[in-house]
Amino acid sequence: MSRKAYTLGDIARELGAELRGDPALAITGLGTLTSAGPSDLTFLSNPRYAAQLASTRAAAVILSPKMADKAATSVLMLDNPYLGYARISHWFDRSPVTSPGIHPTAVVDPSAMVPDSVHLGPHVVIGEQVVLGERVVVEAGTVIGPRCRIGDDTVIRPRVTLVQDVTMGQRCYILSGAVIASDGFGFAPDQGVWQRIAQIGGVTLGDDVEIGANTTIDRGALEDTRLGNGVKIDNLVQIAHNVSIGDHSAMAGQSGVAGSTRVGRHCVFGGQSGVGGHLVIGDGVQLTGQAMVTSSISEPGVHSSGTGVMPNREWRKNAIRFRQLDAMSRRLKALEKKTEG
Image: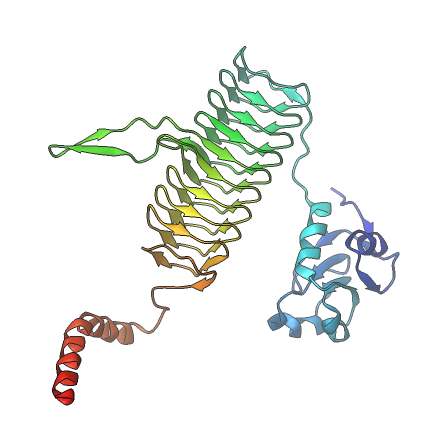
């Protein structure tokens, strides 16, 4: 199948980039510096890959002005080349384009409100009192449970489950396998037996929220679990009941937040980071991968815990020394007292 072509001039105008090259040159795809062909566009945002500029076969490169002289091909100069790549990537997105309509196998409760502009794929289930906005796309096998409200231009990929009472803003993007508003992990001990607590809250998502594949977001015990505008959640993330995440925060894969924790705005959590329950994480906090947070953080900036990889023999020695730290500290304090005396 032939690919649609765009000219470098068209792309430069769209990005507001300074073009050094032939504006009529046709671009039919995107690629990396090493994989791009003579009709592809690529980009350079990380200086460590600058050496690849001399050998790339790409038709043109999006890069910063200070790197332009290192390129042996046409260039589109931007102060933020990665953002330029992000914007132009949508021109080359080959995802299937859906059209309005309801598949014959979809099941829609009579009480649901479904505008004519909505797309419902095969075997979709729409529960009672659901309200869908304009141009919402719900793909195959997705279940939207009772009382959910979905904002305009939201896309829900196959096999997503919205259990109940989910309120979602506009332009949200939910990937396959995500489960939103599942039961929170709430139990009361009773003479050695756990008694389940009914989770009667819901989940509220702001505008432009993205939820990755197989991520789970629990509904609140009493009040809603809340994600603010522009929050981005990666695959395989767990967000527990009553958590609140501020606007434009992002969480990488396999990270998790325990119940009733409040996360501020513009926070970034690295992969496999974990945040305990009933904590407050301030605005602008960044957690590096595998960070384990057991107390509240008020100061913005980068926070880390754990140790980086090292040869096994060295790690085993350090692990033994770690267990000896308390005894070493006690001996040091005793020695200090003797010295002071």
